[in-house]
Structure formats: C-alpha cells, structure tokens
Image 1 (tube, one colour):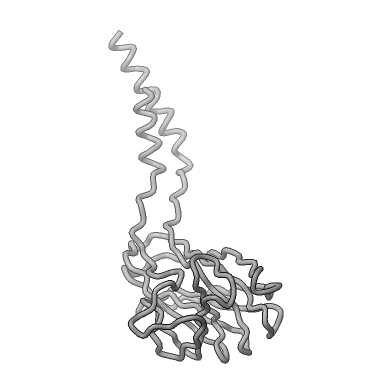
Image 2 (cartoon, one colour; image 1 turned 135 degrees about the vertical axis):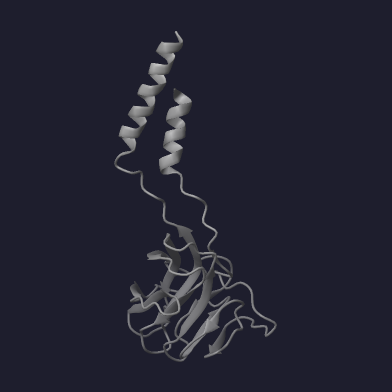
Length: 210
C-alpha cells in the first residue's frame, strides 16, 4: 500500500526538470572583443557574450564595486538609460517560468530610487513589462543586492529577455546573476481523494489475498 500511495503522490506532484537556459547570466564571459575593468558599451554591442545592448548604452562593471555573483555586473545606465537583451532557449509552450535576477542601485549619484523594466517577448506576442525599483546602495563595498522575480508563460521555444532602465542620468540600477526556473505545478485539490481511493483499493486487495 505504501508503494501505491507514493506512486500517486509522484504522479500528481512531480514537476519535470526545466530545460530552459539563460546563458552567461552573471556576465562573466566576453566575446573576442575583450573588455576589462569597467567599460561603457554602446547600442548594438555584443561584447558581453550572448547579450546585446539595445537602445542607449550600459556599463559593464568589474572591480569597481562588489558583484552579486562572480566578478561582473551590468549598470543599465551608461551615459544615460540603456537596455540589454538575451535569448532564453529550451522553453516548453504553456509552461510557467520564473526569471530571477539580483538588483542593486549605483551608489555614486542620480536619483535615490533606481527603476528598471524586465520583459520576455516572442515574435507576435506583446506582453507588458514588469517594473522593479531599488534604493541606491550605501557604498561600492555594500551594494545590498536584492533578488527579484517575475513570472511568464512560454509562448514559443525561444523568447527574448530584456532589461531596460527607466531612470535618467549616468547612475542607474545594476543587474547580476540572471537565472530561470520552472514554476512548480501545485498539488491538485483532488489529490487527497485520489490517495484515499488508492489506499482503499490496496487494503481490499490485501483482504482478498488473505
């Protein structure tokens, strides 16, 4: 009976492993156009491997402040507001995913509260972006990285992930440690009834055998 109950639990609660991939989510790898230390990357730049700078420009930060993961992070404001994008591969249509990333505020100036937008889009699909805010860090040694999460439903096997600053000036929000995970499937409300039914069948079989 124990084996039957365990099988029922697994049948209704196990979530298959997600094959979705965000590559170079901590910005540690650069392309053949090597970038060392801190550098401002202009629109169209692919200096960060697997990522493309969109409108405006961004700063690739190395030793200037403490990163959340690894050595590098990206300030979404270079000389002004910028954006950066990458493709998410291996999505399963209709599945719900959580995108997680670490966010901090450039401590050197600008407005005290920094703001960005994050979005996942596919060709022909319009989805409103999610807005995130972070308070300016105290100093470069204490960046106070905070983990942010937003959810989306996959509408294509490959979709474009974009982070865009909505704060002006050259002192924006920094992102790091971008990753993805499948949203666990909740246990159905009918699961307890199914388990009781299986337990009853197992008990009946044991009585007949006796």
